[in-house]
Image (tube, rainbow, N blue to C red; front, side, top):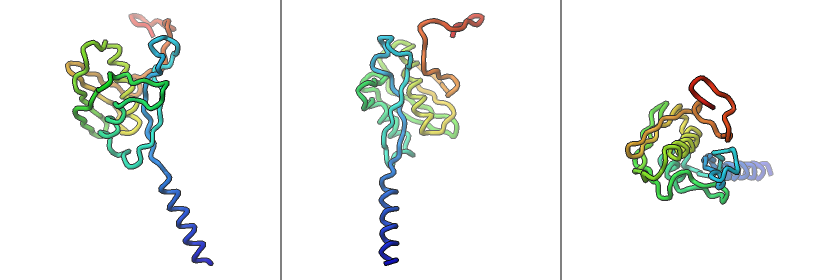
Length: 161
């Protein structure tokens, strides 16, 4: 009887371990962010990626395929692809194939902020540099603001926030 109970307990523990999926959080824009219907610019989408949490190249490529949820959209144009990835202890450098020139600087910055938030979550890097064509941007967590208001709330000499 003891042997049966031990085997049953071992089987239960094994099944619990197999059911534990690895999760990552990707950040995308709400579908209505261009309409000014929301003040939140980036929203999380959690995905199961069992076995791939230590593969940032796979995770970034998966991120670029776009969100699964209907109320989210990718800030990157459809078909954006990862060219190279270089990771050091504190920095992640991502090079994308050239994006269309029709993407404004603000759209590029928002897309890079979304990718930066995503990458900081699963790589442990302190900063992320994203390159595409002649554009380059480096961001860290302290530079990211996830909501915006239509009017300036505070004015500092020479700048608004």
